[in-house]
Image (cartoon, rainbow, N blue to C red; front, top):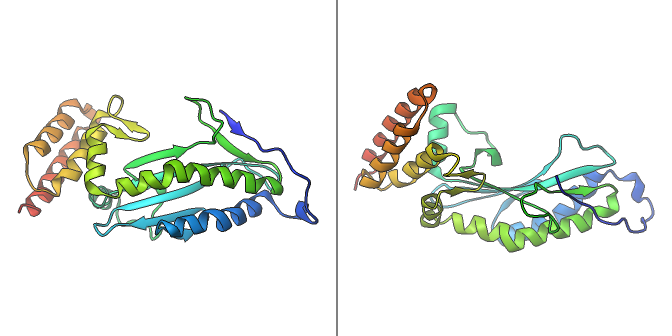
Length: 234
């Protein structure tokens, strides 16, 4: 695991009395908050959310490691996109959604890493002193500006999200390793257009490649999506 460290500057008066958690949240509020609002995301550190007219949710989450302490923390930025059909299926299987939708509910999920992170390494930002928080947040803002906000705003367009699924790329979930899950996501998105050959192909793929232990869930999903498509029939 790669960790991005910032050299500690000389501390200001009283700086040592502030925990790194408080310092990070303050820097996120001052720097990321305005950027989020500029992109029409609502919320406050560590979560900002935006919902489209079609009920698709985009989420930015700054996640701190569970092993962090008052003196040291590691954090990473999670991006999440949850289209309305995906959330509708989630409700059908898991019950009502939380009032504040977590990034873990996303269909597309991706992680932003520190600038210096080597390729193929799961990097985290690290704050070991309150005075280091602004430097960390400056790099977070850079990553969000270059990749985060543009990715989520692109995927909030339903056609762009469908193109992403057709490419087999759901961030952490890739078709080569999770073919059935990608087929489910594909079927959900095209179900809003009514019955189609494309929908049939994705549902057939899922049933052909499922495991015996998952077959009952796949059959339930197949029936549910077909009902949804029928209700959306032009």
